Image 1: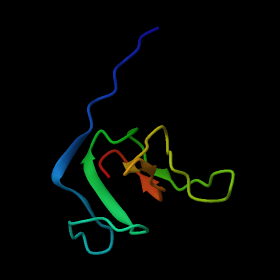
Image 2 (image 1 turned 90 degrees about the horizontal axis):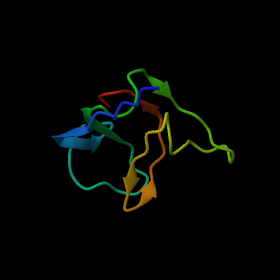
Image 3 (image 1 turned 120 degrees about the vertical axis):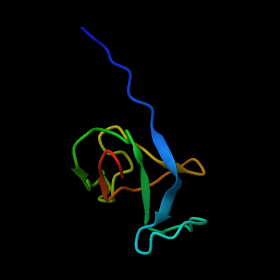
Length: 81
């Protein structure tokens, strides 16, 4: 068996933006954001999934984002976004 270490996640200077305007700045509760970087999860597109309560999942393909230690909900996830 071969175990490979996951590549380090790299985030750019404007990594977190408002999903509609791509403006950077503070993130508000309930805001939809886009996170730009590299090695953010697996190399294929993963679309929204619902959890047992019927809400958007906070973990897609083993990738999770926390804001103030609170898991964010995901719409889609791809390696660079």
